Length: 318
Image 1 (cartoon, rainbow, N blue to C red):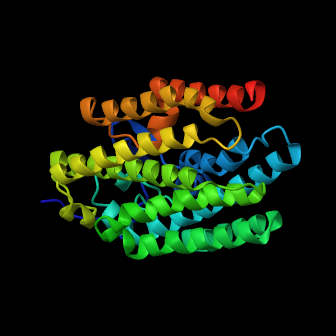
Image 2: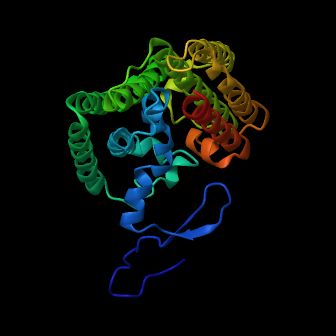
Image 3: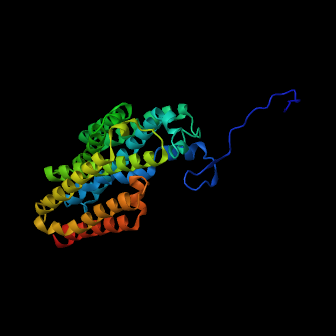
């Protein structure tokens, strides 16, 4: 039996290293600054490129003032979305600590204090809204609405089956609407519909990833998944995949600037969607949506091909 002979009690010191969830590799703990940046999820900012849809499709990509206004809007939405991630992680900190991967998030790993997160979140939101109002009052109000919707999602909507994904789709639509308002462009009904369907596609495929992951790992850290069966998710993915492709195809046929010549952008879109499904179903890829979009060579190829084709059609040929 072990006895303690020292007069002073042993004081535990915080760990200086942690283990990567996938490789088991020992890595140094993050500094508070790095932990705060990590909590803000800068990789997820790729989703905010939807802000530039209005700029691109309105034919104003060669107008320097409009490009600047769209970029400012992009920055505002990046900051307000990061504020939402801080709130989300604060609410889910206990659940995240039980998850095999999410327990490495800075708040769950205690690399960032909850007090610091509670101070950073509103600060980011205030700065984001202030930046948005410098563009125009419509963009400012949409940034406020985006923040409120994010808060509602974190506080309860993400626990309501189907409503959780529809809320995420609404956030994508707000991005497009704000970007169009920033450059004084009209976001057509088909563009809005296509955006919503694509967001629902990403949402339901993400839920399927999570459901498969929890099934394999025997965990239960996202309560809403109790209401999602794999057959139902497969049906939803099939439905929104069809809706995404058809709505985008119809939009390109009725492009307000160049008409049906915009249909040349359909192949990279279809390939990107099929590639994404291949990664989720066949390769059982568990990476986040943002990671797949910016790291997978096939998805990068699809994205670059789509952008180049759209630019050529809208600005060189059109």
